[in-house]
Amino acid sequence: MSRSRRAARWLRPGLVVKRWVLTSGLGLVMALIGAAVWADLKPIYWTLESIDWLLGVITQVMPRGITGPLVLLIGAGLVLWGQSRSFSSIQQALAPEKDTLLVDALQARSRLNRGPSIVAIGGGTGLSTLLSGLKRYSSNLTAIVTVADDGGSSGVLRRELGVQPPGDIRNCLAALAREEPLLTRLFQYRFKAGSGLEGHSFGNLFLSALTAITGNLESAITASSRVLAVQGQVVPATTADVRLWAELENGERIEGESAIGKATSPIVRLGCIPERPPALPRAIEAIAHADLIILGPGSLYTSLLPNLLVPELVTAISRSKAPRLYICNLMTQPGETDGLDVAGHLRAIEAQLATLGVQQRLFNAVLAQEPMGPSEQPMLARYRQTGAEPVDCDPKELRRQGYEVMQAPLQGARPTATLRHDPRSLAIAVLRFYKKTLKAQ
Image (tube, rainbow, N blue to C red; front, side, top):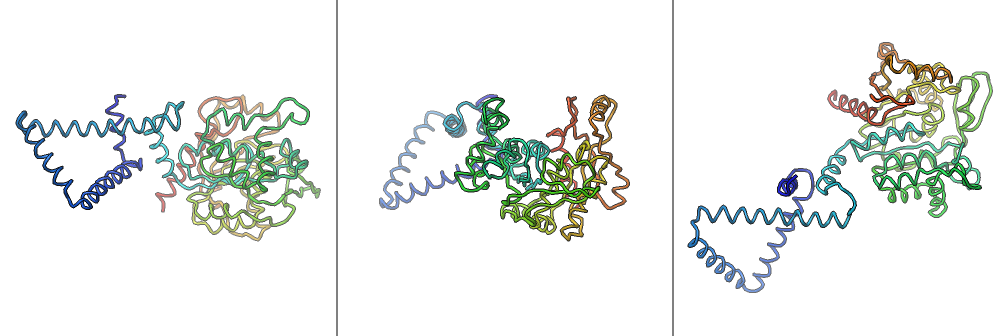
């Protein structure tokens, strides 16, 4: 692209640059006028006499019809060239190693800032997958993350250091990061050896150390967000040290998130200790100002429903006028959602809300995977060997029950080794639902 065309791109609307350039120019003119008035207007007389003399000389050499346009073009060219060089110098100072032009970065930032305010509620890999797709379309994102994990690295740090589990929060921070990929990879790096280090991720240790330094997980997340240049915000569902319990259909009661995911009988009720944990004010505020509220995707009983055990979050969602969307998983999870179709997932959500005394339906729209084609059948056969099945969706029955149903190829168009949500396909489907609701209003 030529330098002149690149400079002309600064004239496009929405960059929030031209207004401040014009403001600076106006300020300079006013400052000069003020100085001239202070000096009894003599500088103005001298300037006018000089301009009159210069114009007289120029018009004697060349006709006015040629001189005017020529001087105008030279002046405009000097302005564009000067501004282009100025912004290039700014870019070299701020990001010397990045190939993206400053004007492109400003245009992208302007577009993202105009994106809808979206609150995504959940945990696990499902929430981070959703966030990594949505950050391409909006910077007004809030992730409300469960803090009930008690397995793996998070569980060890929780037991030994007394901190809230950082694993799901770490994944969301990495998903929303705008910083260099190397720094994000460092945050996600998991030690493969070392006494006491094996199995831990660097990000988990980093968040745990920051929690000890700052005094709470919320401050640690804020500091980590600055390091990773996070686009949006990540908020724990509660500050309480929550421990999950579940009642099974066979009457057994099991405790701990990791045990619930391996339940040997269908789960009929979920709870936590302490009961009715408090929510963070930032989470309540984000829900109150949301344009769209999303639950899922993620493990139903260990990533999604734990967030609905926080009564203040449930109350805030019920008061919101924003559309609410539930995103269902692609496959069932052995030991947790065996035999559940989309309707079964929705019944489990409503049953959990009923235990809090909430009778109204919080999520009246659902996004589910469209029927899979022949190309996915070999992969489905491998999943069936592990006890997993596709989560079936009967759109007619769901619509009869009053749900708004949307189906899309959420696993993406490219073949992969596993059946998981594709970030881009998922984000496109979510935004299509959001735009549809806007048109319906």
